Amino acid sequence: MIILRPLTVSLLVFSAAFVSPALARSRILHVVDLTESGAKAAREPKPFDETADAMADVDAALVRASNQNRLVLVILGGNWCHDSRALAMKFEDLRLAQIIADRYEVVWVDVGFRDKNLDVAKRFGFTEIRGTPTVLVLSGGGELQNRKSAEDWNDAASKSIEETIDYFRAFPGRGA
Image (cartoon, rainbow, N blue to C red; front, side):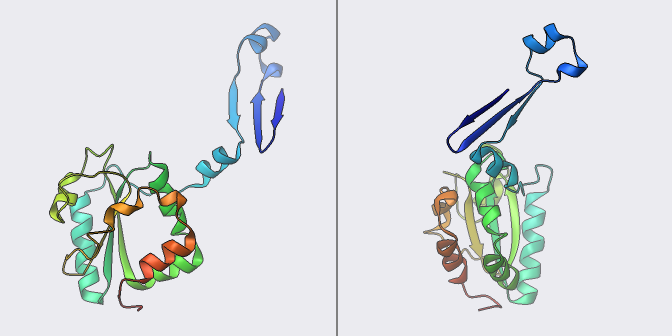
């Protein structure tokens, strides 16, 4: 059965050829979400590694950044968070990807549901994570460069790519 709606396509797949007719009538074997939002969610990256040693990753990025006159981006979020994944997707835009590659070491820190790896946030002066993603821009020496705007990214999905590019371009780094 295929149901068509404006801007939405839902597909229910029955495998009647492989099951009895009674079972095919009584069960939906697969539901495939082909809505615009479902397709977009499937494309969004999931960069947060739940098993990573977040503090060690931050320390390593700081060493690399210090040695190369670069900045560090510490992105506190989770793969469950639409805005965290949306920011990761924006990083795939070629214009922004070049800025990130030229200027930053990037660390994606999984904060669970704001209950994990909180020591990373505290290290840089955040006693709590109010929303995800929270984006920390650090010097190679570990000084926070964006205290006032670090928590402004919990609506990353609604920010334009131009606004995002302008934000990350504003911090001087090696590629400035």
